[in-house]
Image 1 (cartoon, rainbow, N blue to C red):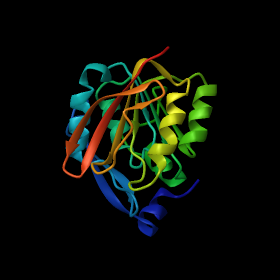
Image 2: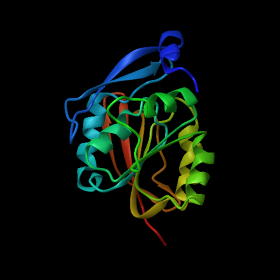
Image 3: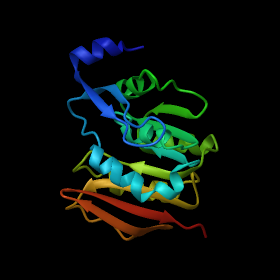
Image 4: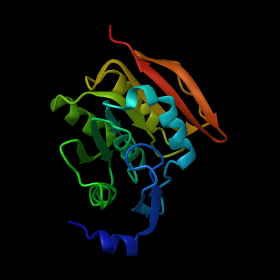
Length: 200
């Protein structure tokens, strides 16, 4: 396995993530932050969990472009039943599963790979989710590429939610398959768009 300590000192810097709600509220975790990562800010995380507060407890949560894992860890703190972290960076995933005080248990799993291939793997494992959080690299075409894949995937259940973090300037389609925009929330140059999934 890659040495986390070596990675901290070579290609990334030490960062901190403060859990802002739930069982672990106030706890500060040390995380490895790659220079190319753009972690979800505390303000946006707090807004996100205010938006989905009625469904977080007991939900099955997919953090699809996990990065530091801050969003998935926040969901865990707030009572999510199942958390799955996905990132194409093996170093990012290793850092997440190595975070002290958050030992990976039966409630958590982590996968290395691109979003599309891991979604297929999760589908084959019969994993389903009430909530999928998507925060792909900004100014990429990942949202356009992955939304149709999610919309046609079997990982969604009736009334599941898909939340995207994206630049406020980016215009998203109102409908993608059975995903329909419910609301958009804007915080300066960052927006959260909430889609709801309706089964036929």
